[in-house]
Length: 315
Length: 251
Image 1 (tube, chains in turn purple, red):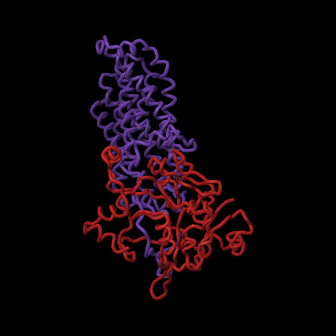
Image 2 (cartoon, chains in turn orange, green):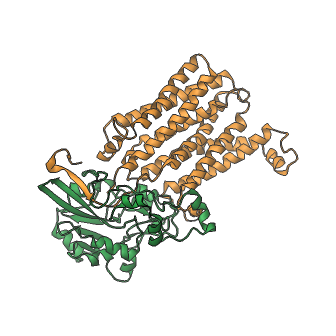
Image 3 (cartoon, helix red, strand yellow):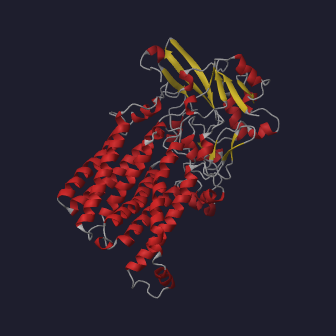
């Protein structure tokens, strides 16, 4: 950067074309947010199944894949809708470029969604035995009930790269210096754990107290580390001039300062204290409130982080 | 063979002949540019100077746009040109996010990514890119950078130590060089871009990426409802309201 504050060195663009503004907007924010829920519930659900008996979470077997299925379909829908040529999405499968994280991610996410759909159908038909009792689909799905447990470990394993590939897309977006930090990978993982625990808290009414305490613990840890990651990025000046110029949008006086701090406070700080207090003395309502705040705050934080690097002129 | 470009900024006089030639040759739609010349004023009157910087795709040897494109719509040609196949492009804008030089745009007529191709169609016929032909002072120099006898190689050798590329820290290995450039001209953060301060125009950002009338529903319905083929005339007609005219000024 060149010092612009004295008259002799001041440089101003006096004639140029109009530049594009925000290229990836709210649809991509929603896409990332929904994917965090979609993979997060599987990761957190697997942890709960490892720690507790199934009987403590009677509806987990069907509600976990159902939430994931809905979130993943929101994610896929907005991925598609954001394309300027949505019908050509098929080209990702017909003419894949394997160096692109978009391609690898699309294949993995499609496989993941397919497997989650199978789990949802099996879980749903098993949970409601009277539903479509004589229907051919119902019968055949109930006939492969054991398949659920067989594919579940693979789905949990696949949830990790599906969570993380967006960070690789951001890393491949080499024009956006802010996203080139390794912290992006961890941000994605914490976002998934935060969103997954929050989504499961909202449906955990009939679960045992211990499982809810574990959910509160995961939410507390995820909000704490998410906040730490953002603060690390916010304060430490180890980055390039471009990243520093980008962060000026969230620093004091920046146009995204308010949204950023709303995200931090709503999404991380308040839910952290509510979750910690809930581990000591349970209050279901407050825990649900924490979960909703965390989901709202996560959206705001992701939105800011997506948009600010796009505000800088590249040429 | 590795084709490259060199612009001698000491020669460029900002006539924008290259910009116009490119527009005409490649039928680049309104609000889009494959090549543009940026004016930067340095200092304060009366101790001020003006510099002109032509900006186009750098045809990087390690092109981030080629790497991120999920369908290989952006691909290398044997002569080193990074070409774009807009019949295959899905319009994800990943390339626009990846290109450190902001050289890729979403074509509002086709709603696919597009950019400078060094006039690959002309090269194939043994002609020079349109911008090279149009330049009245031969500030644009084009040729094979791997051939030591080519004009561009000779020019580079003749200006050893004075050759620069944009954003070398990105490790993209651009095949687009500048002579006579400086931080002011080549670093977009080294100059201010103040809303409303530009000559002839008071807009700094486009209203939309691609066709602004190509909304979410249009993207899905266009093949069935006959979303009319856009050209410059229809783009002008869609922007005839007084407000947008005032915003765009006379540029």
